[in-house]
Image: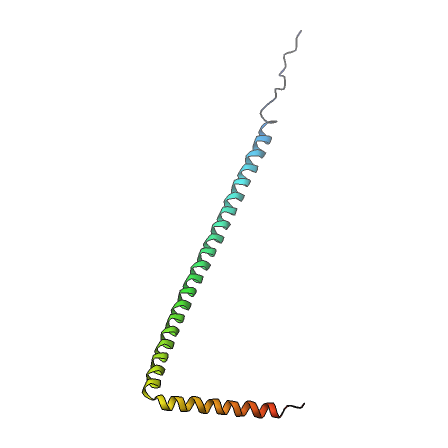
Length: 114
């Protein structure tokens, strides 16, 4: 007589843990990739903010230089007007400064030990 028994069938239990483990591993990888993407997005935003701030600082520096150039041009124009208005006084001032500098340099050179 044949025994009627239930043969243990291979159930999906032996396959399911492997599939389950793979699913969990895939979910972890997706979560990790999402986290990395979020961090890269945050870094990109920080870099964009830093670049914008650098551009603003450069524009402020350019405006400052432009103002300084305009002030120097105005000063030059005023100086030219003064020189043209008082040419003898300008020549006398230049000669006196040259004489004072020449005397000072001669005095310093004569005091050097030989």
